[in-house]
Amino acid sequence: MLFGWDIGTIGGVIVMPSFIKSYHITASTAANLNSNIVSTLQAGCFFGSLIAYYVADRWGRKPALLIASGVTILGIIIQCSASGYLSALYVGRLVAGFGVGAASMLTPLYVSENAPRAIRGGLTGLYQLFIACGTMLSFWVNYGTLKSMTGNATWQVPLALQCLPALSLFTGICLCNESPRWLARRDNWEKATAVLSRVSNLAPDHPYVKDALAEMAEQLDNERRLIGGSTFMDLQREMWTIKGNRNRALLSIGLMVCQQMTGTNAINYYAPLIFEDLGISTTTSSLFATGIYGVVKMVTCGAFLLLAADSLGRRRSLLWTSIAQGLAMFVIGFYVRFDPPIKGATIPPVGYFALTCIFLFAAFFQFGWGPCCWIIVSEIPTARLRAMNVALAAATQWLFNFVVAQAVPHMLVTVGRAGYGTYFIFGCFCMSMFFFVYFLIPETKGLSLERMDDLFGITESAKAIGDEETANPRTEIHEKETSHVQETTTSPDVRKGATESDATVEHTEIRI
Image (tube, rainbow, N blue to C red; front, side):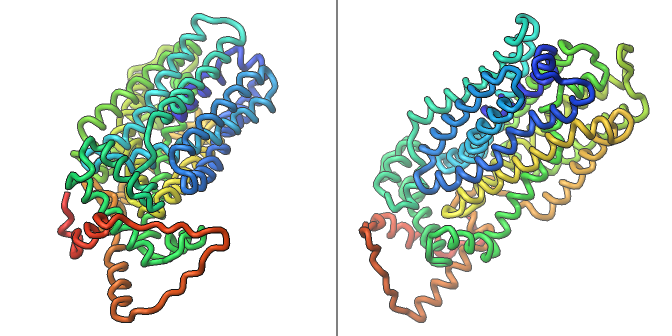
């Protein structure tokens, strides 16, 4: 919701007359200043998502989320205190970006590591639902403050209310447990068992809990067998030199590039400006239309999570929405190209159809490229690389988010008359994404996180190395660390389970 709330807030704030007056924005400087104000947060998010990987892997997912929410609150306080000082506003948005970027990487990671496989898609997709919910709420806050307040309060109150999701995150995560898979990586099997028992509401000795722990142990053993060490460079070698891991990292990057090039955040950030360009003449009316747009996003995302996330699947959802999004963008582009709206004139019927396509685009996005990308990138990596993989995907998302936020105000002015080329560019990207998904993205619905290794061929590589070590045993010398040595042993039950669990699983025999 942190991410979504800022998207909606800043897009409405930059068109408010009191904000324009406070920061001395003129018609000649509007495109440049608006893009800078919006995109400063994305720059912070890019670095925040990368830093969060280190914190989450070293100290755990829970402490990292607490730090992220605290940093976000600090940045929002600076923004609200800026009052006319553009440099202070930039600093506040940059600091808030560190927290928002970290939370954007940590939230789907944390949820996917706690969720049962049967509902993992729906629970991880709730991340996208709360982005849509935050966007919708902030749209209506903007509309309400513009209608009922005067002076600087019209834009300061929306900025201050960004603290609400940050405070909610801080309070909520204090009541939550650490990720069981992070605990397993630290060989804290006793606590991992207790957490898994708690989140599944089953006894610690229940077969489901024991099987899940056995799968974790088997996956961790396979990963350690492939590379051995656990330093940063070891993990980099594991990610980029092993084909299955490299493919997963590249797919995660590709999905996030595609998600941003749909044009969704072009509309999210600049919806009031776009609605004005399509013929809605007043700021109040454009903010009202933006509020309806937010409602459509939230409702359709909720419908997807309830009806399709774990039934229709990830792959098919991405395929059909690629075409649908592209068609909606083309309709808007043709309207602006051949019958451009005239300010103050009555909107023609084709204009209303183009406006409807804005809402249809939002619905299509929430049925595919919105939630599915975050679901896939958080569930396909191996246990040791999951935080790094999600951080890389989140950083990519924020990098291209920054590119879109910087480019769109200029595109709406320079790419064809009334910026009609903007819509054709995003429409072509949407159409091309169909082929990216068709040829490269596998279906992951119903598979456990540990079974992703089977899907990408890692299990067979690890077994081959294990067979070679069995045939040619070697003596390993382990040097003691100068500070201290802490012995950690895996639970006998878990090791036994790992030995007995699906040793000969093939791709066609994955149990769901």
